[in-house]
Length: 183
Image (tube, rainbow, N blue to C red; front, side, top):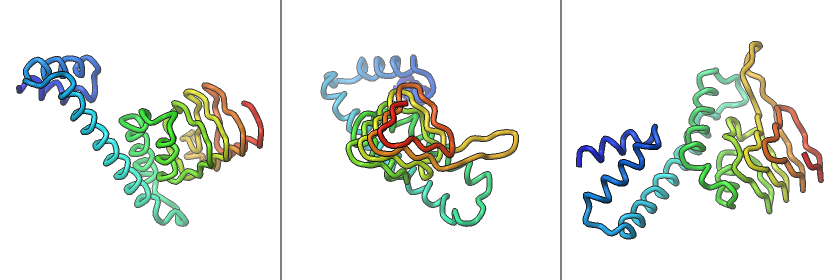
């Protein structure tokens, strides 16, 4: 019992602990695998929804007063929270309409009938605008801001209607991908 708790604690950082934790919990429980998996899936979904809503709330709170100059700490914290949520839960939503809804909650303008595949985490979703019918390929990177030796560089990124951003493409701050373009 104590060993499974230790494995669950470590499961968030190392994949083999996840396997050991599940094996220990299933072996020591009187549940069948199905009766164990369904409540676990429901609990993970609830965890993800709560994490996503908290992320949206906290990032909107931290972005408040964006008309004034924000501190680097607030900007960094907002980016880290958004990326952490993406890595822990939102990446499992990729390719579904739920991922578009998640991006809209974070402040991204997402059009209708978009196909957003497994994209890399977006650190500043409020600066991104995605038009109707856009397809973002696997592991494409839309970077609205980055740190350089001259400080934090950011700019709006606009992907217009019916454009395709191919797999592993890179879109940098200030970019406009025009209508009906395949990149």
